[in-house]
Length: 244
Image 1 (cartoon, helix red, strand yellow):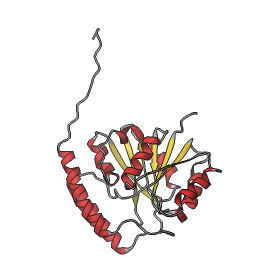
Image 2 (tube, helix red, strand yellow):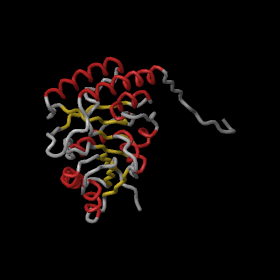
Image 3 (cartoon, rainbow, N blue to C red):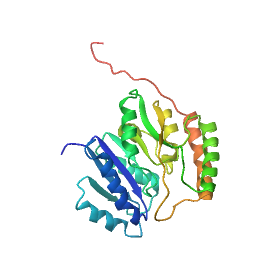
Image 4 (cartoon, one colour):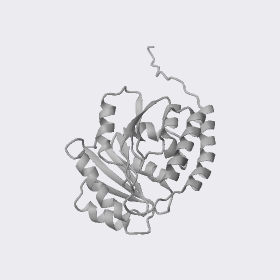
């Protein structure tokens, strides 16, 4: 089987009502444009998410479904999806439907005209549709993160991203790493680009995060990523041969 050019990885936990509409939008956005697959990773949902996914598989040849046997969180779901993916490039979407799949071709177009050393194209929600408290908390978190990590990225929390699979799997793995991908890519020696994207209201289900648990985890992780950047070291490598 020929490997697709693109794998769309979608982590989900209790998103039963959002799955079918989002998959329909992904198919509409990508069929006829690029060879792709969709990899859903269910993080041990307690609702009917898995049943919906298995039903959709019958009529959606692009759809693959993975399921965690223990709940492990969004970063682990993304990483396991990327590890299982067959595409050389990965697009990620949040499973709640707030990211717009029509932005994936936009990210692909940016990749097509970008330098080869740009390995991450990060969505930038310029018109966020979250509550006022979430937007306020996110602005402050982005300011603190930007000051500490110097990653020149206005929005690291956006779920829609496009990145090279090989570069991603070379990054250090830890829980919540998906919130720090620009800084981690830059630490590895690659460049990143922020691209304005659409953002939508959640129409079904409930958010899995609140401002307090985001803040408590974020402070600890931010210190850890700052330490990783401080301790990073890279060296160019040349392979030698007998006649050199």
